[in-house]
Length: 252
Length: 252
Image (cartoon, rainbow over all chains, first blue to last red; front, side, top):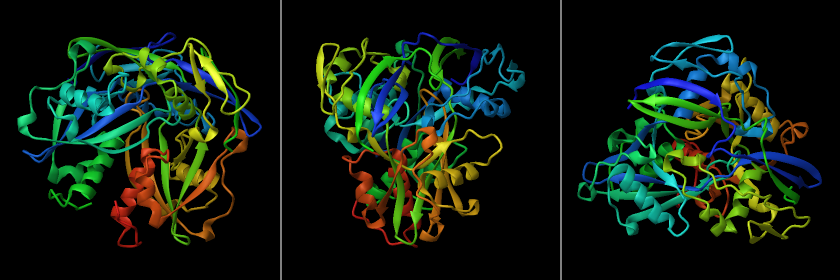
């Protein structure tokens, strides 16, 4: 899953997924404008397997993460283009004028903006995440969407009634404004009805990963393991809220 | 700060902040492509005032959040346009063909795609966040950037040596691939050298907000208070790691 080849980056003038809009507005007498993108809200699920006492995460190649990792290897070029206003928050960008690279082999050397860089291995773009999905079906409850994601990505069939809402929060305050709702699901080996892995017809290539309970807190704070804040937060939420029920290491 | 007027949304074909790129690649023999945006990494800071035993947050109007809230009031129109592939994750978009609204008064009625919607009050776009900023200066340590943000946004002058790194994580795995590093800073009233509020010349309009320690956990899990996951996670991190030092309510 980590064999990444034939990388080519091109400017994208007509994306089906990233369509910038600009909103003009007046805030307390000051005229402002802001560029944003429309998106769907999302759900995520912390899955705990009570048979094996493991958390069930998904691991997948994230092209955007990979490109950022690659960018860091030629840091000076990125930073020189920086200096957008802070108010633009996560939206500010350092834009290359030319494709970043087109490399037939891993660890190949690419040239971008005059800076020679080594293409990192595919593992540089792999991240550990909670099982998650978009809220893109109008007629379904969040719980039902969460249930479908658990089934598709991780292969567990968990009844909607067993999904516990943890909380919700803004997941893209700068650019998308979307909201994410997080659930907790306890499953057992008996709920395992498939391999998971996502929907290949939709291009998904997802590895189901188990993190043993006794390693969870170390995993959460190990910065060498690329992961989302959802993983970190939910492991700690479990530690605080489920520890009367399940033993968990507290050496953090 | 919450008086939002004269809202007009237009498609944005040439944003300085949101520039989509497309990466073509081959993953384990399968040709794929993904649309992403370049961005800067960021830092965030959990600030605790030891004089008043309060957390110091920032509150600001987020146009993207506001537009999402507005969109939710005409949910059927959004959902009908949905159905992008799950693999696009946070990037999938439901795009209006016409401006969403141009309304001279709050609570005005706008028409978009045949759906009449009420413009929500400005408070619908206000979010509570950790003090944060972009890593857009090549010659500065993350700690130094964090220190500057604490000063600009919250008015506290805290020595770099007093910044404690909490952890780092992927903050935009689907679209930007950026990384955020979170710090903890203890300040006292003696460190307060200004009002904060951000840089007006850069369009920033930031309210500094105090959350008393004994209300922190209730605040964290109150879904009626719009906030980022950084706020929730860091309050709980404090609860777990600083409770031997400071009393904190544990009724969650």
